[in-house]
Image (cartoon, rainbow over all chains, first blue to last red; front, side):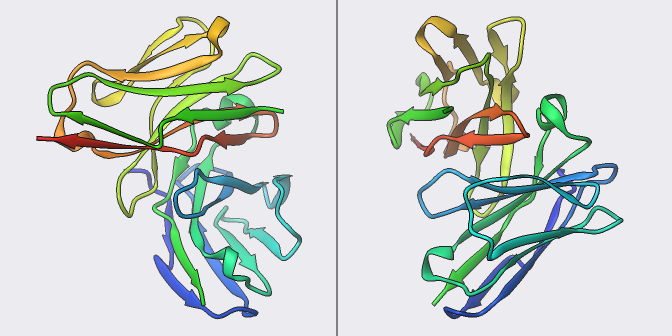
Length: 116
Length: 112
């Protein structure tokens, strides 16, 4: 049991809309990472938040943004949705940052986003 | 730049046969390497990892992997496949900043 929960599980949006995905970290974890997994691909790192601040970002445009709250839950926001944004979005939590912390990532089941 | 290549997007084995999933990495620093499994409609579950020390690492469900620096490989094996092993498998390398770089994935099919 990972303890990382994501909502919603599935979502359908149209091009140009905005979407917010949510993640509740495992108890005791203060770091959250978001990954995008397109169909047939491996997950790609979007960004990481540690203690409410962005702590690393992948090659994603600024319309992908995030928040981490004092209780360490997190949101991923995507503006101006494009068809290529259709993917499984995975949230992962860990305790702390750095190599030793990221050895122990716990993933949620993901949110499947479809953009029509 | 670090990268991960998984050779073979689909691997099919018979139940009871050896499972071998191939992973090669590119890294300018000593790598931290991982294998994850993903069942349909689920997130990623860690199978095993190599950080330092023994190059043969054992994971859950009878899987193991060997880190071979000279070959820049981290292949995943299991002596005897079970139907429940059918899933998507991802090799990944951990780089600075806590970012995991994943391979494209290998779908394992287990035939009865």
